[in-house]
Length: 230
Image 1 (cartoon, rainbow, N blue to C red):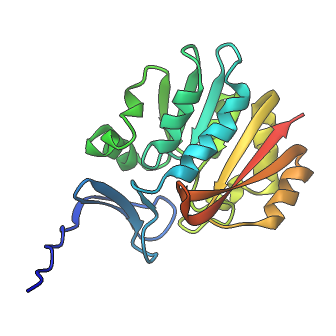
Image 2 (cartoon, one colour):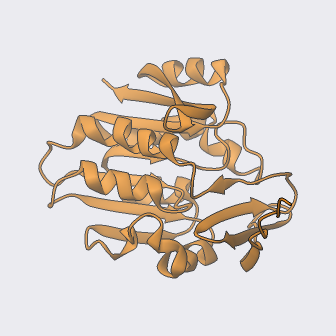
């Protein structure tokens, strides 16, 4: 007689309201895996087993400037810390990385048990955390050699209307102004958005696209835009 294996229960570890949006963020743990979901959306927003595209985002955004002395990088959106962790691996010991995260509880989760997933990147002395809107941080804390944006689900925001401003023509002009010459803007998206490519080009960026899997060799295909400031 076959016996079914017991299901590992999913445990809610924390909740946080979405600032300026609807619903709540929820942090869950199931065994060794973590997931963050939004109460107003089906499924998961992110999962600790699927972060290959976040790694690729940081690689594409940071590798071109990694050789610069005292490179300064802005990471927009902390999430589960994988983008930040990969950025730190790409950059030298004299680099400085500013992380802009809108939700204070997400920072707390990454300083707690969630931080183990990405190797505790917030403990790196090169990191400065700013709790607030990434657009404001971009304007106030520049200039940067690279800006890496993993905010919402990409240019077509789902959780917060204000995120659309970040990817608007005015928002892209702000990104351009916040970058040093030869700087890089890298943007992650869960879905393709051809119109966004044209927006980046109109803002003055030289653009290339990269399609990456959410897991190495499998899973959903995500899009990363890499825009270089000429």
